Length: 115
Image (cartoon, rainbow, N blue to C red; front, top):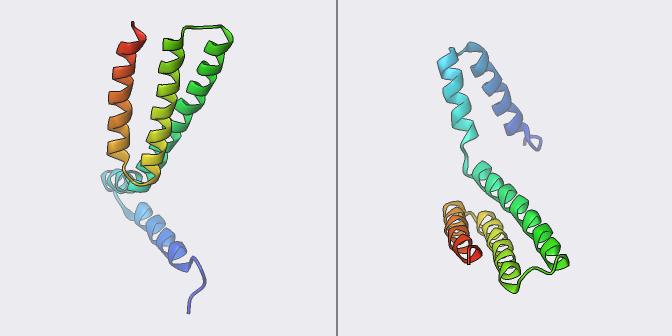
């Protein structure tokens, strides 16, 4: 029986040894391989969604206080909902779909915002 996390510790030791004994090109390839994981993509998508969500909430509150038109407030609320949807899809592992919905939704909302 092994201690909890011992496999992670052994893997980390092997990674450090590999980094010490490899050429610069192999190091870049190794780091690139570890950097682009689905978990990191989900986290990045959720972080971007959270930033847009907080920005959307702030802009909506500001627009309501300044008595902007209902169309502008509606667009801001829809943009906030899109960012919340992006967070939820990222949480469920649908990062490409979440990003696509977010970008297409913002393009459509930008046309409504121009009216």
